[in-house]
Length: 384
Image 1 (cartoon, rainbow, N blue to C red):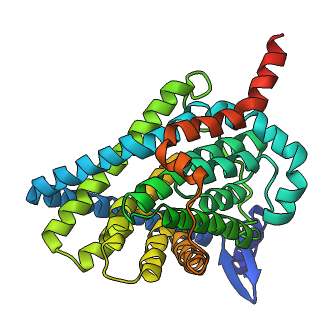
Image 2: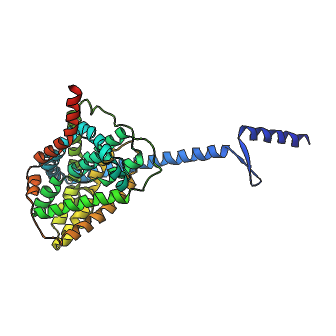
Image 3: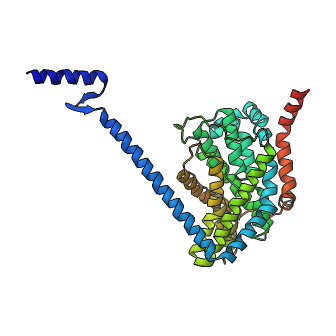
């Protein structure tokens, strides 16, 4: 009897401390939950260890690939750097250098004038207008950088930032019209088809994702660095980082084609790097409609190279890598469909397209300055 009484007192003590509860006649000790948490943390550490091993193996494979075909890798790196110097850097740099102005007062103006429209269409605040415009005109990763800055300034949560950043991923019109259309497909009109298909895809994704990730309500932290105090220095570093990504993936793409040959290697190249993948699509012996649709699919996916650039710009924001690339696959399907629809339209070369493709730096600078005019007016008023 005494032992039963002691057991009863111990049970009451455990219940009082919350360490034991009765559920369906069975005693459940709270320590089991601690064991479960420890098990989940152990599983997470194992996943991190496996991921680190996978990264190490991938790095060793890439090094072996580059060393096995140094001539092809050097050619791919040289072409990627030439593409960066001729189109990418001139199109991006004005937006990167003026980023504090472009995501400051224009975002506030968007909140004032376009907030109802943005909320009704895309379930996003008005401050997202400037980031959406930059993503459509300047391409990646300027759009992702602008989206993060606008989110940190306006109080957007992680779910809203994820929808905005994934939707506006793309390429500048100078690259699509001049680099891909005129340079690879030998048709400026087909470059315009690609640009319009990308634009429709960005808007369609923003509409389709408007109800997603409502549970991701964590605030977005501001990016570390001194872009506000030294915008030109930050722009130069970002542009050089983009050059590094393009050079690495360009070298890998050419080395892979030299080692594996065509066929399977071409599919991998299309997934890795958009300029190399677009060159593969342009060389296919297919009709114009199929060739243009496949090129649009490559552009819509964006490539692993651009994906890593965007994820690097959004690091710390809780955007899962697999979700990002899965939605880019959906964007590839949409972009190919929009391009195929436009093939039925009459072919026309616009003078505005000649300006964009022929003078990417001038067009990008003009668009960036026009978008920064409200910020300059506000700055002048504050000084005076």
